[in-house]
Image (cartoon, rainbow over all chains, first blue to last red; front, side):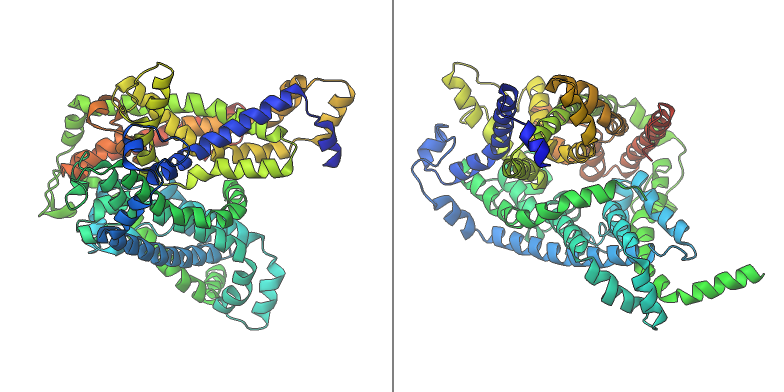
Length: 291
Length: 304
């Protein structure tokens, strides 16, 4: 590595690359800066479009106002609950699936794995799934927001690949000592897989936090709106029709208020991001190994 | 006979594993396979009171109806246009950014920029669309007010069809370009270091090394990614077009997924919406199999 670094002297070409990458990184960050700047600026600067990088006429009034809205808090609570319950259920199911189907000589393993993988290529689609969700009584309940999508096949593949790579000698030894499969899973497999479980848990959590479409089609009552759905009705009002038929949707909001809502709802992602990015690259690579 | 006995014994040994797999298989059967059976309503006149099983069969009538609707063909055309434009911009750009990131020498600088570039991938589309609507707004949008200082515009980024496609592509590239580099960067670290050393001793320029060593080394991943992307031409995420789109640009923003949503959920035309979904799935599979065959034919790894 050191040898290689030495050769990369700062030539003109390198300088150009550094500048371009810096610009690109800036372009990725700028929208966030703009959100913060808009949310913390006074009325007139925002109205005249003067706000670009930093707040003008600094004020936290927008945050005060949105945090006063009970609907934001209800939505926040719903989303936190769906994220926690959903992530827990998803992890349990994914671990069970990955553990069971990582056992090479399990009779029926190929068939069951095939059944799971097939759903990556073909599915019932929006309406047939909608009818099933309605049929099992989940419509307009929070359960509809995580039970129907609790296992992601991609995450299953990642976890199974990881379990397969664990040394068999460990689990075999425990089995010979008379430990049950459940015990092997809990005492040997899981402690060795904390990193991958954390990664996949974070993937699921971010997915639940960010998803809004399920809430859009399965949730009817305004008091069960998730944060993203509430955000959508605050940001876009009635533009698209049926999503925003209660408070907030019809009132014209100043940009600062909108951007403050964006900031508040994105904050949790930014908080977990350092942990997330520590692991996800590895997760992505594991997932690209086909099973 | 003995074989069956052995298998049964094995099954009995693994009984706890099967018990663990019950909730998993139940999930897949209820939420993934029963909906597949529900596809039959594409061939029925679905009646909400009669249910999936009780509704009368109508053969291909539903398909005749959707194929006769010009909105359907427009949705297909829009899906292709948006996918192709986004691919044409983001595919080469992702490779170029990967190559540039790979050249960076400072470990710290590289790490920080990568973290920044990956970040937008984790932001929800609602937030991205909200930010974009704010930035690209015709009046008092930041971009337009900057442009106006240079005497340009205002540009109708969100309300003219041509510009909307560009805005859509910008948002997609912004969100996914960093994420897309991961796979190329992994491939680039696998390039044989001795080749670089040899070329360095032979006095090859940076550009020559790029053309004769780096690109050939990652050619196979480039081809695979291209085929993979092309095989997804018929499917398109619903979030971006639904959230960024508006009544003024419906002519280009209404894609298959949003059309399925509008027909199915908003207008409650269950049979028609299901038929559109089925048509899309079937075309998807045909393209996927063809792409896989093609990949294998040119000596690359398959994608299925």
